[in-house]
Image 1: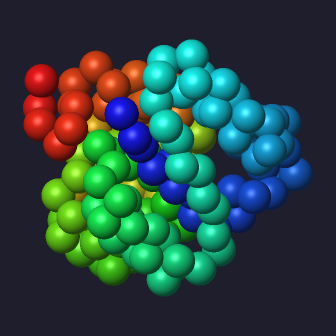
Image 2: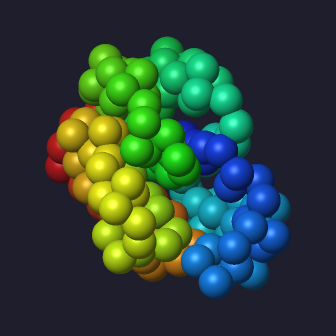
Length: 149
């Protein structure tokens, strides 16, 4: 199984940015956690982060072209603004799980809107960095080679 794990703006500042919401784990520690978990479960993980919307769109399309089995995405602030990400996920038709470290539904009103959610098979919020592992495990359990198991 091959999964793309994509992170949007400011996630490279995990451990620095608002630790009350996002915890003290750094981005590099998060990636190590994901890579270790995936290796133990025979999953190839392609982990990427960008502060630029177009990079995320390109990587979603790359996931399709590289025959990935699914995508785990934390779009960051683009969750609430990006129709481009929604369209990209819809166009590749790969099972995608939306992840948010904080419990966005209990935060500011503008964080209640998720454009990308309409194209996702599951959303995980408020489980901290473990939400990524839950998303990976869900995709590993439910989807293989682009087919629902």
